Image (cartoon, helix red, strand yellow):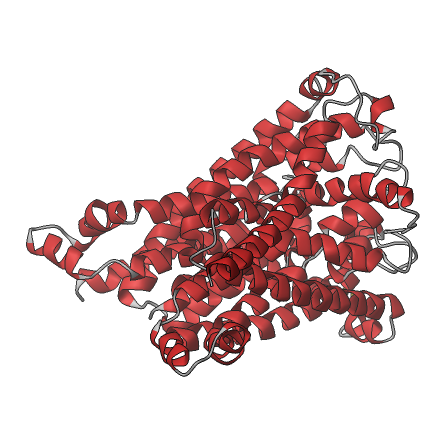
Length: 272
Length: 287
């Protein structure tokens, strides 16, 4: 009996290790490639190579740092606006059932809209407003999916706050608005944090909008990475370094949002 | 009127205004564009053509090829993700599994990273000259052309499986953890174990969660773009041309914005149907 249980455990462990190897291998291989010379990159099966920092140095002296900064600015502005606009609205949807099911459905639909449906009019709009190749254009396009997503997340978190909490605050002399921002908002701080972090990651990861709305002055990091492998040539080592720069921080951040993600994604539909 | 009644609309107004500006107005404008002969090279001369852009799609083989490719991609990718994700979720749910939280945290990471990086990493890994996977297979005497016309779409689906099985795992594991324990105890008393337990107790209880996870993944997989852009650009031929990539090509490489907008509207209808289904499933599983 005990040996059978041990055997089952060993098999489970083996399968999980295999899955883990499949997940981790591309990360490690890319990290390794970022330290290889061009000659070493052409011999993938040869493990005997002298590591070099040249790729990282070249990458850090290219346009990439500027693009990282652009990505951070776009992500931060988008998330800040989404929280400012989304949190009061989510509270209204949650506490007052404003708009009922139809409103919640609209929020869900908005975040699911395919970018291809919005890119043509957004591009023409930005062209008319002379905002092409500015970070404002990217922020506007990112708001189309991050603002509904943050709102959807927060509806779920507000639904979990017992109404007695603000009723008590109002008995103590707060207005409804004061009860909202002094009592209710602080209790959903983890939800706000998770929504902000997840929203930032989605903005940081976007290629489609940024590729079409930016130009020489406003490229974000994913656009920069995509530019390494073109029909004109490949800079594999530098590209690998830039990829590590783009995914490393996100992998670390993911450990903090994973816990809250399911509650957030269930959002406004789970209760109500 | 009591101020409370005003407050709920005051809280909402900024959101409605901004979403109206970035989604509502563009969607309306896009409808207008889709009814015109609108090209980026001659914006001033857009002519009303009625439903011609939509009718033109019916006889457009590239459009149907892109739809077909996208549906194949979605079915293969989401199907595999469901099977693998459910299997892994069962293993990680098993209380006796050692280090399950560590495994969980690391196995979930691919869903958070940018798809263009995933596309480029796999282009690199699977490249026939530089890639370690074809080189290693060659050493074993196996020759696979991952991005040739026969396998390319399937390879892209496998990349999607690598990145998005974690999402399936996340939702299914949460679903398993939320299941009531009584049915399992009753089934154990009746002598059920192992596969029978999964087949007759877990699966029926998990049906709403599975359905929701599948619909969310389908909605997302329909938007596949980055892997195509990073690796095949729709080729060889049109074998990996997906609908989102096709709209990009027609609108921004051929400048035929009216036609692209019409295609986008047909895509919106598919998304609308799926979202209605998702909302219904989420609501039902909540009550």
